[in-house]
Length: 60
Ligand SMILES: [Zn+2]
Image: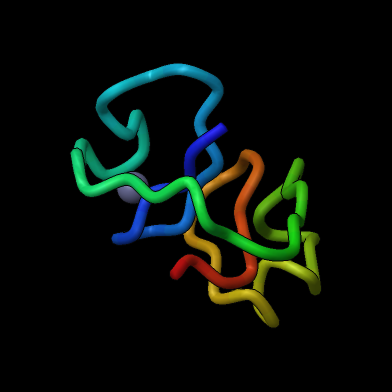
């Protein structure tokens, strides 16, 4: 699995991030948050996530 360095979305095989269209991906990431409902999610606010989906907390 890879995570996007730009927005930290976790990808499952895509070579381009579907969230920000970025191609700067990293295999080294830690933590994971799953955001289902952006507006109701406190986790999304804490993790500074801007879209629904799976996101890494830190990407190296
Ligand atoms: Zn991205």
